[in-house]
Length: 299
Image 1 (tube, rainbow, N blue to C red):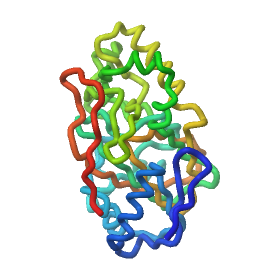
Image 2: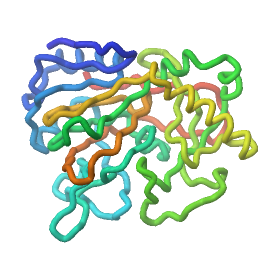
Image 3: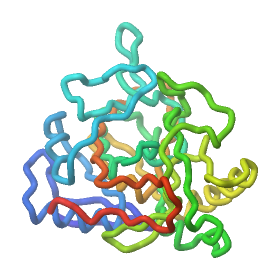
Image 4: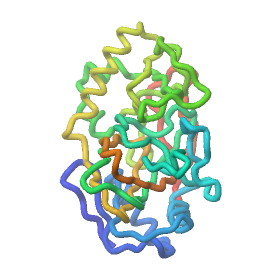
């Protein structure tokens, strides 16, 4: 087994590993070390059924069930740990998965929860060629290179993370649209947190639409968030996954942002996804400066 690093500040391919086989402790330790360093790992040409995807995922923590979708249905009732990401519809015209074929904007997954998932794992069953790429942005490096004046402005600030919409901008079932960002439903998190494995600070932004910095005037919050997001999503902080069938990708949900390109609706894209349960509450009821991510891991 070997780590092939990308030329970017994050991302790497793991060579020489068959994920359909049970991993030993040495392999798990190696992957955790690579994951801490590169934040996003990809494994090519894997052949996994849903049980094997679940078994692989459990090497890195307890699994978290999928969040709500706009359709209010369970895509794989027999595998409640798995979320389906797809534009395909069944014979009745019902979507077999979430997010469709449109663009999914920059976001981290389910940060509207008080305890967001710590990681995502995505496996490609069917993908259109050279479409629907997924991009990742390194929030540690983005914080490191954030201008000092902006660091001062957000130090100790708390951000509302919207729970009403998914990353494709679709309103989730049971929610109403809110015009005032300060009334956005969702968890409150510090904008700056610290990864306890690496001891590095990072930006924790969630999703730009409907976000609000508590205690600021709406216009002031909007302007400051626009500046931070423009900085954090610069190309120099990013790496792109160009999908092929059999790719498995795993990413640190709290440490990176990700987004997906739109793709031809006449093509098929079917992905199965698991996520790892967060290990501690990071929501804020009072102001504090830097929150530390947990060190707990399975090795």
